[in-house]
Image 1: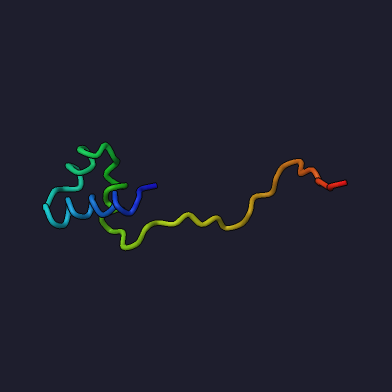
Image 2: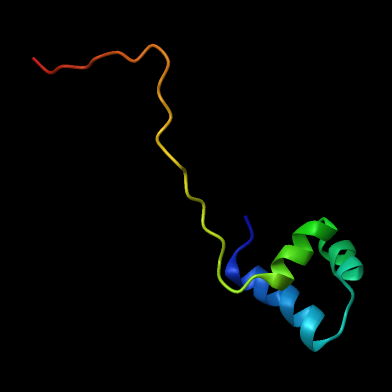
Length: 64
């Protein structure tokens, strides 16, 4: 996941300097879709899991 500072650098290169998404992707060694998403980003992306995954073979732990 890209940090907000990295996203800001990508946006600065594209919006202020006028560099193309392809040239930014090449210089930063990122994919074009990643750079494109960063240019469109307004806030830092957050990972949100829908629900806690069930553990296979869950063992009940009791303290004695």
